[in-house]
Length: 136
Image (cartoon, rainbow, N blue to C red; front, side, top):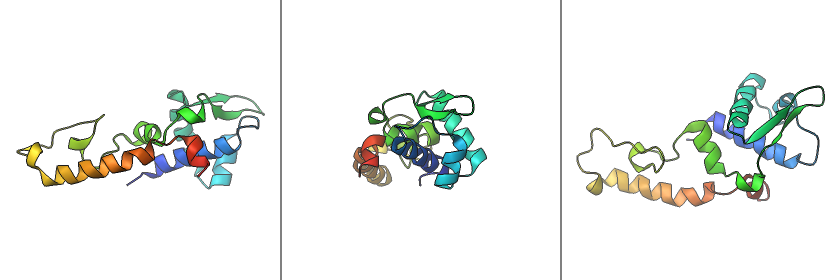
């Protein structure tokens, strides 16, 4: 399941994409217009800034804007940044692989096969950029 944190991060990026021709957008404005709790949003925006997805400007006219082209920021990268693995179980994750302790044989594990298939079918959708998602 997508966490609220990841959902709010994506919503914020889509909002900034829609406002990209304007001056930087304040966290307060994003919070109010997207109905995201302000304190929660501040932490999300800080994380996106630390990961160089966003940049911020201080002052009365300050706020957030993209540090990278929205065409290069994928939904998958944001989900991984905020939530960690995309895979629903750790033994099928490409970036955060962990062997299941109780598993005797990964090659014959039916659960692993199912969730590997789900991950591989879901990933192309998540590899869409923020820009392409905004244009759906």
